[in-house]
Image (tube, rainbow, N blue to C red; front, side):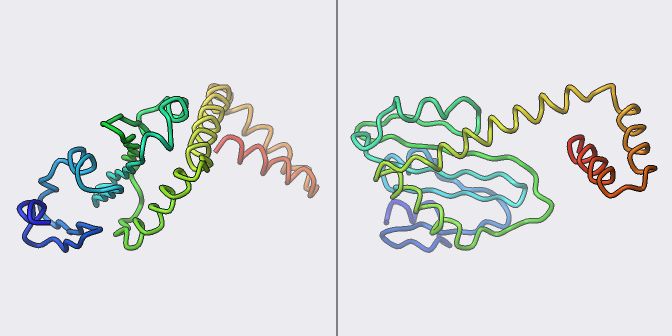
Length: 177
């Protein structure tokens, strides 16, 4: 705790957490080193929509070959350090409004317990979401250049004034949104 105090005089430091809010400036420590030495979980939130969440687990409970298939993109990675495996989740997506993250770590750290007990569904969910996003991107790409014909089809369906055709028009619009 004494070593950590050197990084911030304003931080709330207890044996299980280091909490500090910066309104001007940024975190001065090296989160990778902190995860290797001090903590099992790390959460960083910035009001410009940068987010990072890290978990450290004993390597004997989760082998590299279990994690590697989920690390296809830049949002999820891992590294090995001594007898630990450190997972890192990153997001730079802009949100419409700032959320301060109050209570997020308490909720997210439950994932560590799940992973330690062999429940890998949270990593599986990320993989499924990535696959769905790729399919969606491909589908939208297939619609490119057909916008005017799609709008004509929507107008045609609406002009029938039949409820079933309205539903078809709505479906077309949703598919291309």
